[in-house]
Length: 157
Image 1 (cartoon, rainbow, N blue to C red):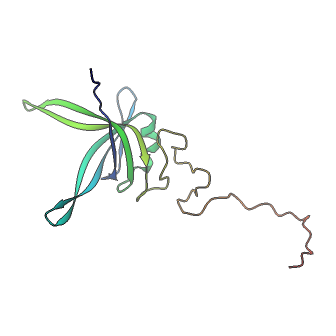
Image 2 (image 1 turned 60 degrees about the vertical axis):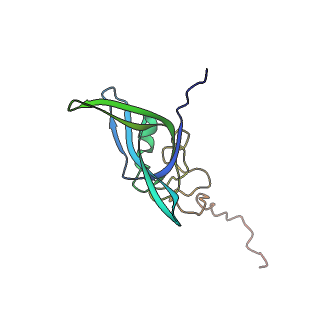
Image 3 (image 1 turned 90 degrees about the vertical axis):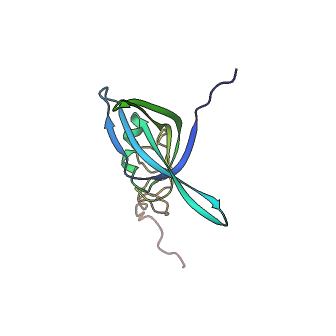
């Protein structure tokens, strides 16, 4: 018998800043929406279209990465689809969301820290070795070495 598979991988840009809230149990949950763009051919022309997905991320990952989740930031999301069902005004309603298991900050506008994995070390916005904390392209080699007065000043050049 075949096993069902529910796995989704999306790369897109945040539509608005992410919202962090807490459940009554104390668990944190971050909600955000991403736009995933694609090009398709319509007649003789290529047409851009966007698809929008609501995403939720639970737990410590949500707390540590929330400050980097600003409108326009490009992110990669790995997760599964979940369907919320409820009744409103006597009609059954439902909505499909992406339940994120892993979130990756990628390039694009927003706070520094692109390329850091929310599930792994360094997800708290800390710079990785060789990465400038200001988000620039120059490596951070630390403070200059202390002045060593024992150096011989009689250098011929």
